[in-house]
Image (cartoon, rainbow, N blue to C red):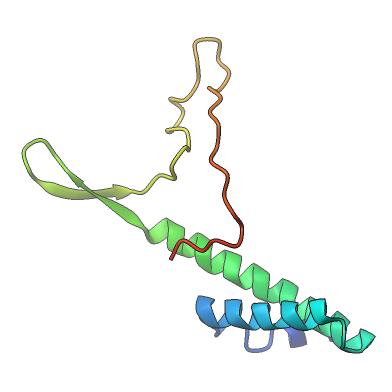
Length: 113
């Protein structure tokens, strides 16, 4: 399978459809009951599907805004920052090194939506 044929139709898939197909491919590969050539093709398509999902998530993260209410009661928006992410350049300590915080353990199988 060539890279262009592995990408056929993937760019048109929604995140949910790409993730569902990726899950199906993983199940087939883990089952071990497919021929080597088919397994290689499934792996190649899975890599492209995973990249597509990552790109869609990155674009979505850029669009997500957090609603904020000011002290006067006005409602506005600002970019949503990830929990535990250091603020823009203000996370440095007095010595100039970034402050260390324990990041929460995230299960890669958990999808937040």
